[in-house]
Image (cartoon, rainbow, N blue to C red; front, side, top):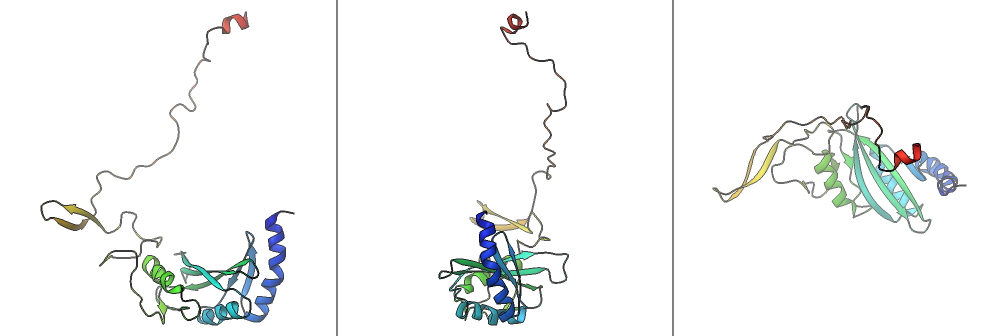
Length: 204
């Protein structure tokens, strides 16, 4: 039995217990337990995971963008139980308008992660004390990790020797994007077999 199969077998009872007590749905994938919670109940769910199930650490809050969905974003929380030696992933769905309740009161480390998710995806977190951009520059337009964000961005930044300062300009591409087919020019061509010195002795 592989390590992943053993881990899934161990997590299944825990997942069933969480489904019964937290009102979430659960599945085991890639050796890790994933819970899907309602957006409005995320604070309550994470509080119970910390206090009743022993998940003491919030390792990360990240996002995923699915533009074709009605609620295009998934906010994903990764928790660690040091006493159980188990990780759990909690997902909630949202969009550009509906805010997700901040979980700073449950896990203070969420403050940085929620600002990062706001900056990169435009996800909103209600109750966050300092919801500002974190990684992009002042006056940055858009959210870089959205699937519909242009690959070139909206502006480019460079140092101007004449003005002796950093200037922002519309994007100017020196060349068009190239399409790579990765097909070697040597593939498919028929060439005679190379004759190496000494081959004539073997054939003779």
